Length: 261
Image (cartoon, rainbow, N blue to C red; front, side, top):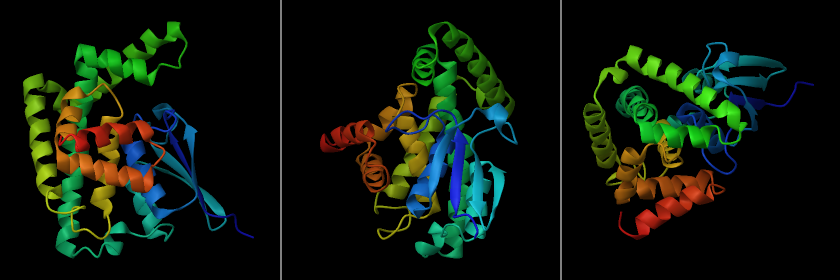
């Protein structure tokens, strides 16, 4: 008898009842939670993965287990192998809407999220908050080394990608542009393409917004979200639907939403 379908998501240690410190890990978990497939989380750092990045997943189905790296390709594998349903098909997106969603996904993952990581790791006061949250359970003497190691690695990646070459003022401008685009998309409906069912882009955007709101390391963009009734409501409804155990996140967005942003 073949083993039941099960997925092990490998990524950095996740806080209890809170979003992951990795936006891409949180994005993947949103897809899994939405689909109802059996999964578990396993602590792992990037150097353990096939591509030296997280997340990567061990997927057991049809009597075999395969390891797939990268959130995009994990989700693609799950859909192509009929392990989860394609949210775009469930939401009945047109080919044009699917194309628009792919472009917007790239914008969020390749521009907004790097801009948020810049805010976390380049700005001294935010760096302190980020390392305190990420390494709070690590022995005290190891924290400075881990903070230095990851800051050096992440800032190097951001510099190579181009985001790290910008000034903080320029990065804030990029964040504002992304915020305005998100507001336009979510101003009229519950989801990007209507009120009935979330599509891939809704799950993706929610994963990153939840990640951003869960930390004190990116106050600039988090503040934009909380001042927006549209984005606050979006995060509130998606959290209630998929992650009701995220009590602190719910309290944060409910407070912003009830006060009108």
